[in-house]
Each structure stands twice: as structure tokens, then as C-alpha cells.
Image 1 (spheres, rainbow over the protein chains, first blue to last red):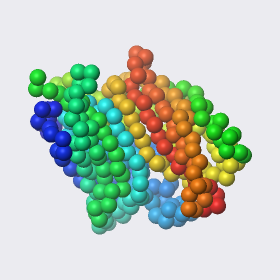
Image 2: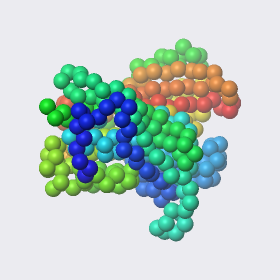
Image 3: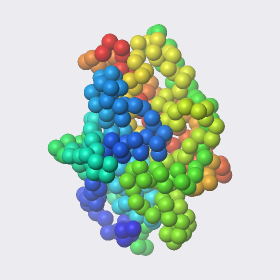
Image 4: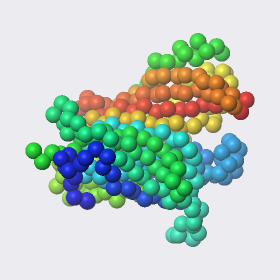
Length: 154
Length: 164
């Protein structure tokens, strides 16, 4: 994995290494199976139309886990994700599959974050971060916050 | 049903469900996220980390052990709430996932059994442009087989009224 980041090396305002994601209909079916959320809203167009959403949308919980990955990638094996939150503010549309292996054209999301506060608490070296998912138009569909504990050089 | 009766649902809790954490289920979860981190799949790698072995990505708690066939793993809200809320004019079938908050205390490891219990933490009705809405916050705690608090989750579900 990426090399370990240390608390001393991070300043308030620092950017978290962005994480790019796409979602295809195939990936959403895989997520349904792995998460246990079999709501047809995420893979059945007729159902999505029937409930007024119009077309299948990306699971909120999958977007949540993209943001969790943003943080676990960045903090490394010696970091700890202590608090995490996100809100599903806008719907995100998956790509249709062009072939069995190739995703069609469509959205690419960027998971991003920024350190808002650096502090010590009960002997732990902590950072508060704003985190969010942006769609291709730069609109934030999924804002959130995270608090992490990083190792200190000591 | 009156607003006061809806408010009485706050504090209602579900029974305890036991979740089993399998190594293969952890890997399939990480695969579905598109997360290649060896900490979630490679024993040899993970032994060299402070965890000493594979762990689950934060947010994965395994699968319920005793679950009737076809029952959902993801319980958007307890069955006990569905009746009262749909009697109050809410479209329970079109519930929206509003967001999630986690506090993580301990890693989740393959072979863990977690006791999951959920309580209705908050329930608010709001008048929206297209009719009334209900915001429900469910708080779930996970304890592991050693009795340690592993995580606390607060999920927000948004219900819209039939008039939409």
C-alpha cells in the first residue's frame, strides 16, 4: 500500500489524495450481492420509473464506502478511522455496459477531502476532515466528515 | 394517526441479531467497493500490519446468522415502525436513504460474531413543498464476542407522504 502518512506531516487545509470511481450496472449488481441491499431501485428501470425515480441510481451505501476507501487509503495501515459521516444529497446515475467487460460512457466521480482541524485528544493525534463526492459537473452529491487518528513520529 | 403517536415510536428498539463475519464475505464486500487494499484480503500482508491479520473495511459488519430466506440484510427500519408510519400516510416502499454516521471503536475481524441492536433515536416530521416528510434516525450498536463495543451507526431514512 501507499507509504504511511504521519500526523506531523499534515497541515490544516491539506488535501486528501483524491479517489476516482465509476459505477456500472454490473458493479451495482455486485454491490447488491455483497452488501445485501437488493432494492430493485438500483438495477431495474421499470421499478425505478414506478417509484418516480426514473432510472436506476447508485446505492447511497456504495458511495459511503467509496468515501471510507478515500480515508483508509490515505491514513494507511497505522491510521484509524474514528468517526465518519455522509449524506446522500443527490442521485447518481450508473453507466450501462457496452460489452460484458467494457463500461459505456457516463459519469466519473471524484472522492475528495480536506483537513479542517489538527488536534490532540486523550493522547491521540487527530485530524478532522471534510470529505465529499463530486460528479463530472463538479457538483457535490455526497458531502461528509471524517475524524482520523494518525501515528506520530514522536 | 396523530403526530404524538408517531413521536412515541422514539426509543423503540429491535431485537438483537447476531452477525457472522466471514473472510470471504469481507473480500467480496471490498471487491464490490472496488477497493484493492490487501489489508482486507491478504493474510500474509495483513500479518505485517498493526492489525496482525485481515480486517473488514469500516462499514462492514458481516451477515446475520439466523435469517429467514429472502429476508433483507439491510433493514431500512424495523417492521414495528412500518405499520404506524404507513397509517400516517407515509409511502414506506419509497423510503430514501438519507445518510450515515459511524463511530468506530474496534476493528472487525474474520471469525467475529457481532450482536447488532437498533433503537429509534429520533423521528421528526417536516412539511415539505410536496407534502409532509418524516426523518427517522436509527442508531445501531455492534458488540463483538468479547463484549467490546465495535461500532455505533446512525442511519437517516427519509419517508415521503402519499400525496406526492
